[in-house]
Image (tube, rainbow, N blue to C red; front, side):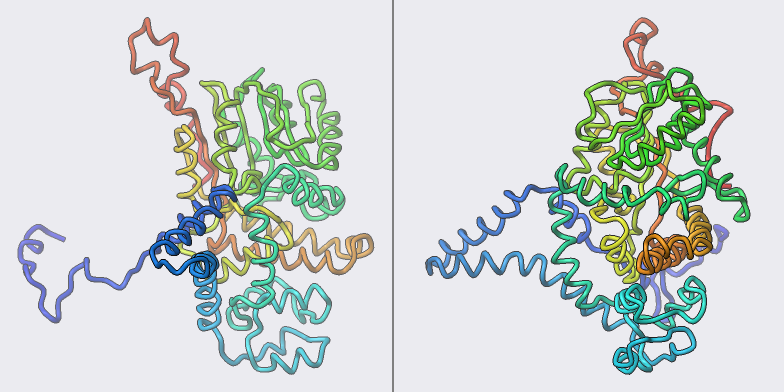
Length: 487
């Protein structure tokens, strides 16, 4: 717009003229930050809040203990029950309607078929019936899920409510060493063949990095491992810690290709066994150590480079700040921390939450720290880290999971023979739906490069003082070898 056009705009808008500040866009409330704050608190404090409010109400009213008891019960109902009911009611009002799902879904249960005839089927009803073999998809599961908005409803059900109040909240408010081991170790000790059937030879349970969607899964995963090493500027002899090392792909890659002395930690013995065998085959057994334990039990020592690829979700919102402070205490002052974490979009849709409950119930129990980026970076800065680089790689994850889906589907006979039809169907639903979730940004993965936010920099003090300062941001981050995954 030219300056003359700007000068000629009317100062006062008429009924037929609008200005940019008048629009229909709406933002989101502060409900999520409040929920995060609540989940960080101790059980004692959470019990103290309604107790204090109830005591104040009792003394203010002068009506004694009945007011105390009534108020104590009412406070959590108002703070938790009303928002929950609002979500449930809102979800059930937004996408109903008539539909013919018969060309795509076949019910084995006549009563269930009659109940939902001509109506959209809630997703929780659909996936529970599919896993229980009460219905079949007549076409490919992924292809049918692409039509989900026309066929199924993204609304909360009684089953969702039972899981949320019966299990999900309990997972979120505990996150002790014992409870986390119970939630996580059993998942990854299920069997290495189970995971190999969809992850493929690399056994990397995180996103690959693609230059072309037609890249092989193996090439994308090797590219990803190298990217991580570039991000942390891995060097010969670096003491490297990988928290949540899985089957050991990163520790072995770093040791083999960059000469690091790498240690991984996992809760699963099955993963550690695979990692040890991988290190042996790669000729780096002398440079790779894998510990089977909780991250909170790591020995108090310093590391040059620390990486954590999609394990931090499992520490929980309750322990997230404690986790970051522990990492900071273990990182050398001139070290680099790479945090890769799955997260949900801040402007959520009902499908995001319905999918999240499915994931919490069946795939990643207790992984409640999958949050919007603002939560993660705020927590990192609060813990004393400087956020250097953040990249959103959800679309890469979508392509990765699609290849996992194809692998899983191609191994159906072997999977069903060993683990049964239910496990096969559960992962068909998980993988097919997650391809879509990643593609549309409902859930994504953030790749975050961090360093200690030191008080001084070698370039900000005199030459005689610089020796006592950990590092130079200028020398670290300026150069020809800048790294980015996006094209």
